[in-house]
Amino acid sequence: MLLETIRIYRRKAENLPWHQQRLERSQKALFGQAGGIVLQELELPGWLGPGLYKCRILYDTQIRQLEFQPYFPKEIQTVALVRNNDISYPHKFADRRQLYELLKFSGADEIIIAKNGLITDSSFSNLAFSDGSKWFTPATPLLAGTCRARLIEEGRLTPAEIKIEDLPSFKSFKLINAMLPLDESRPLPISIIRL
Image 1 (cartoon, rainbow, N blue to C red):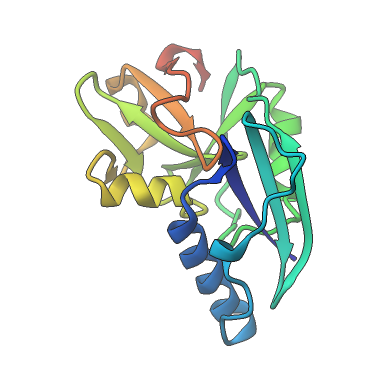
Image 2: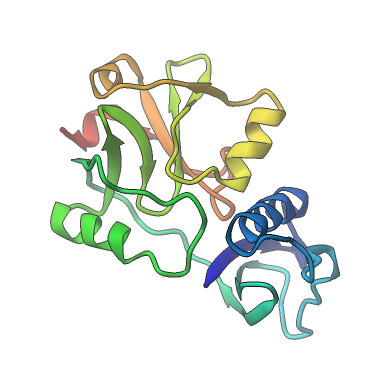
């Protein structure tokens, strides 16, 4: 089963063109064709207030489950670097056990995953690294996120090959995804990453 997570703020679904692109790309790759789901036609329930909500869509060739829940960002105090050359997560699957296992065994609040010496993603987000003037994102993410795609298209985020040994050259980093836009995600100092 595939998953899309859409940010709903002030009763408006955000980033829909990029979610639609990823949804269709995943359907084509896994089922041979895309279609049957038009996110623009998503109807918000009447009880949804003006706050921040997470819309969770489970789907394959059609929507199988739709959930709306208030969203509260995860508090991150500790981050561990985890090396794993076998991990693969090319589509946003609902089954994320492999990622959760890496997080659980790290003993940290969150992880940064390195594959073949290159920085990829956290357990639930893409990454953005700042050198103090510009934001960079790993050119080799496990999952090409919708927020990441939009920021690259807007010229606000530059893809770069980031090696483990490059991390100290950055000042801070952010966890970014559909629910954590770059402008709202809290910057974390590079020094909190346990190498």
